[in-house]
Every structure is written in C-alpha cells, then in structure tokens.
Image 1: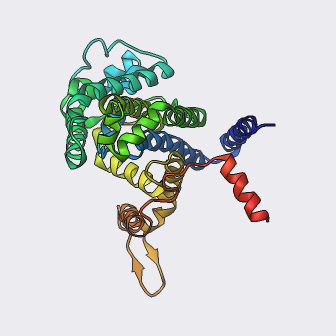
Image 2: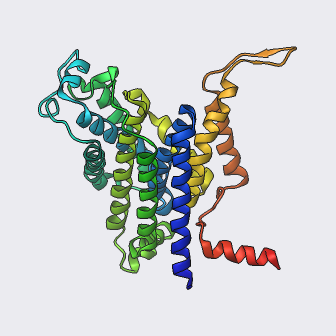
Length: 346
C-alpha cells in the first residue's frame, strides 16, 4: 500500500473513531458533557477559519465576531416561524420579508454563511488596502459597528432584548460535522496553489507581487472563506444556546479566538484545533476559580471573570516563552508520525 492510500485509510478510520466517540457521548453522556463537545466543535470551526486570515495570510484581523454575529442573526431569523417572530419582536415588529420567511436549519446555516461572506466582500475593498495596525483598527471598528447596529436596529435584531426561544437544532452531528468539513476545506485550500500564494504574501508581500501573485485577490479569497465559515459557526452557536443578543458577540469573542490560534500556533490548522479543544475544556475546568474556595484558615471569594484573567496570563506566557505556540506552523501528518515512531524504535 502506498503512502497516499495508507493515509487515506487512516484518515477514514480516524473519522470513524471520532464519530463513534461522539455517538457514545450522545447516547450515554450527560447533558453537560454533550454541551462541552458541541462548544468544542463550534470553536474549532471559528478558530480554523480565523486562522486562515491571521495565521496563513499574516493579516492582523480583529473582526471575526462581526461575521459570527451576522451569521447568528441571519440563521436565527430564518428558522423562527412567523408566529414566534411576532411574539419576540414586541417593541417594534420585524420588517418584511423577514417577518414571514421561514427556512430549514441547513438552509439558514448556509444563508448565514453567505450573508457574512457578502458583508466581508463589501468591506474587503477598504480593509485589504491597509496592513498591520491600521488593518487591526479597521476590522476592530467593523466588529464594533456590527455590534452597535445590532443594538440599534430594533426592527431587525430586536435590539438589546435579543432573540430568544430558538429551536435547539445544533447537536453533535451538526457541530462536529461542520468542524470536520471546515478543517478539510480549509486544509485543501491551504495546500493548493492559492494557499501557497497566501503563505508567500505572508512572508514577503513585495516579493510575492514581483513573482506575479495578486495579493488583493488571494487575501480577499481568504477573507471571504473565513467569513463564510464564521457565519455558519454563528448559526450553530445561536441554535445551541437558543438565545442571542449583542452582548454575546463583543470583542471578547475575538479575543478568545486570538488566544486559541496564538496558543495553538499561528498558521497551523492542527494548532487551531488543539487550541480550540484546550480552550473549551480549560474554560469549563477553570470555572472553579470563579467560585468561593474554602481553605480552612481563609476563604477566597469567587471572582467573576477570573477565567479570562488566567487565559490572559497564559497568552502572555505563550508569547514570552513559546512565541510559536504548541504547533508553530507545523501540521499533523501520518508520514511525520510514522517517521517519529521509527526513530524512537531504533
């Protein structure tokens, strides 16, 4: 069996093992465990798509929360029935035709991704003309604009009240199915000629341009793909927690994604997956630091938000001591694994 066929078989077996584990958790796991796994799947999609722009293309993009927000609201408005919308939009009725449209969950997810992509296309012209700190400020500003608009557009988003009572369509198959699909799609893109051009732009944009690569075209492609998967992840998140409001999609969501991809390794899809898993699991494990702790001689009161302080400290430690993160820019491959096993067996 040649290497490519062997790797294909191993990939198929790994996917079968993953979905078998998910099936066991879905059937025998507690609701809390299933919730954590769902969060893992959604954050993997967000992190892998965000890493495409920040890690692979080298753009300091601080506005993924905007595309996640757009996807979440689009998907939520499409899955609700007209009667549910009428009950939710009490202060101002929802505008037509959103007030009468209803679509299946899969259509709403795709619509969320497409709408986010459309917004990404519209802002890509001014955004991709700047670099570095300016790009970070512009994308950060776009994220804030979307959040403020969600508060202000009462007849579209229901304002600060948000949208409640969504049907919990997101389950393990949806969250992990989309996660696996996004990993495969983005890995294929990174390994294609487009992906190699994106890496060349990241390393030296002027040299890449001299070699005939069009930076704007390739960066826009990465920007749109990232926004598409971010929008779909937003739809999944909305139908997992069943309630969305502007406060859910603040800059802290972007900050969390930044922690994930920096700790995992900027530019590594494998690192983004590992970072998302560790972040989701660690976020639940660290809930203990936000609860009162009794040590007998003294009691430490629970401090809300302490988890974020610890995550920030971890981020600073990674930047200082392991600047390349867990994986650096390396990716997991069966060939590398077998080479390492052979070397360790000698």
